Amino acid sequence: MSASVLFDAPGPKARRRNLILGVVGCLVVAAVIGLAVWKLAEKGQFDAYKWKPFTTASLWQNYILPGLRGTLVAAGLAVVISAVFGGILAILRLIEVPARPSMGSYLLRGLKWLVGAWVEVTRAIPVLLMMLFIFGVLSANGMGSGNGPLIATVGGLVFYNSAVICEVIRAGVGQLPNGQREAGLAVGLSAGQTVRLILLPQAVTAMLPSLISQLIVVVKDTALGYNVLYGELLYTSKPATANNGNIFAMLVVIAAIYIAINYTIGKFAEWVEHRLQQRGRTAGGPAEPDSDIAGPGTVAPVAGGPAQ
Image 1 (cartoon, helix red, strand yellow):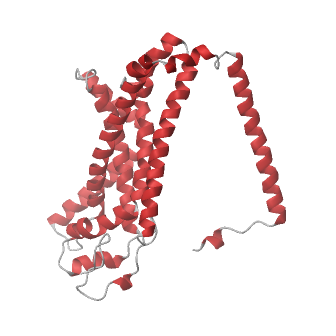
Image 2 (tube, one colour):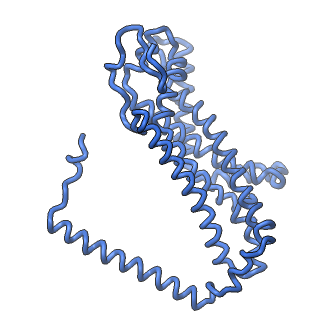
Image 3 (tube, rainbow, N blue to C red):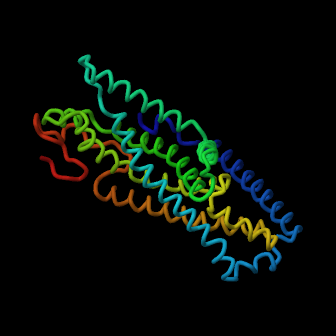
C-alpha cells in the first residue's frame, strides 16, 4: 500500500487551517513556558547562589560524576545482557516446528509457547514494577544492600528490553522473503542453523538503527533505579540538593546530561542508518526479492557477503 493512499495533500483551506492551528498551538506553549519561568523566577530558582555550586569541583567529584558512572554501568550491563538474551529468545521464537508429529516436535512447540508467553508478559509489566519485585526478593533473602540495588535495576531493564529486542529481530526476519529460509533448508541446513546463519544476521543488520535507538530507552530507564536505592545519577545527586537547597537547578543539570548522552546515541543511530543506505540497504526496509536466488542449491547473499 503506497503512502499516497494514506495521505492526501492538503488543499488551500486545509493549509490555512493547519497554519492557524499551528500558530495558536505555539502561542499556547509559549504562554505556558513563560508562566512557568515567571513563577520559578518569583521563587528565586534562577538566583546565582543556587547555580554557583555547579562551578565547584567537589559537587561533580562527590555527587554527579559517581552517579553518572552508576548510570553508565547499569545501562552497559543491561544492554549487553539484553542483547544476548533477546537474541536467544528470537532464535527460539523463529525456529519452525516440524510438521510430522514426534516427541521432539511436541517439546519444541511447548518451548516456543513458553518463550512467547515470557516475551508477552515481560513486555506488559512496567520496568519499575519488575525492579521493585526483584529488589523485594533480594531484600527478603538478606541481599538488599551491596550489589542488590544494581542487580534489581539491571534485572528489570534486562527483562523488558530483551523482550523488545526479541520482537525487533523477529520483525526484521519477517521482512525477509521466504526464499531465504527455503534456500537454507535446500542446502541441507537445519531449521535452527537457517535461522542462526542466514536469517538472523540479515535481520540484525536491517534493524540495527532501531536496536541502537533502544539504547536511549535503556539509559533513561536507569533513573528508575532511584526507587530501589541504586546509586544512579538522580540518587547520588539527592544529598547535594539537600545541602544547597537547589533541587530545580540540579534537575536541570541532570536533564542536560541525559539529553547529551541520548543525543549522542541518536546521532550514532543516524550514522549507522546512513552507512547502511550507502551500502544499498534501506534500514528497516524490505530485503532483496527472491530473484536474487539463482536456482536450487544457491544461497542468497548473507549480511553483505557474496552469494555462494
